[in-house]
Length: 141
Image 1 (spheres, helix red, strand yellow):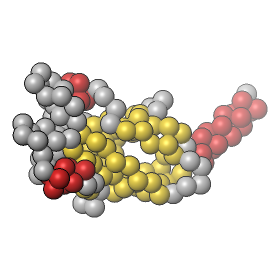
Image 2 (tube, one colour):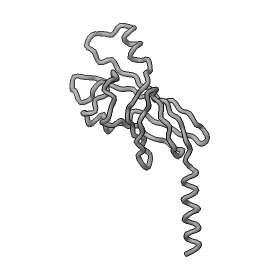
Image 3 (cartoon, helix red, strand yellow):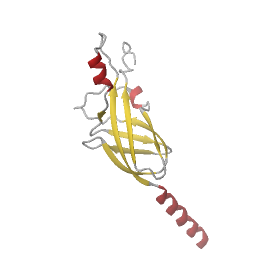
Image 4 (spheres, one colour):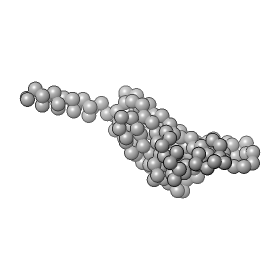
């Protein structure tokens, strides 16, 4: 029993130390969903990354980690190295102009990006691209 407890605490310590604290900057871009052909200025505005501020996102690997970006689009989290799918949640920042529609189930269940956490790397950038609303039949992404 003593060997088992020693082994158990050793494994717990290894999994604790496997996590590393990372800082991630999250930005977003939008698809143009208007009816008329966009001007080059409109296209450039939609394709220019903007900070995704005060927004809840889910990182999913074997588990889910819910985080919230701050007023500059960053969050800091202790996380294990690996590949994570990035999902959005129904909690959004209504003050942002995004093509994100949390009432659309397709948007809640579709990953918007992939984040690869590497051992030893501390800072990351990720851009999430918002398509036109897939729940509206007349919109094409």
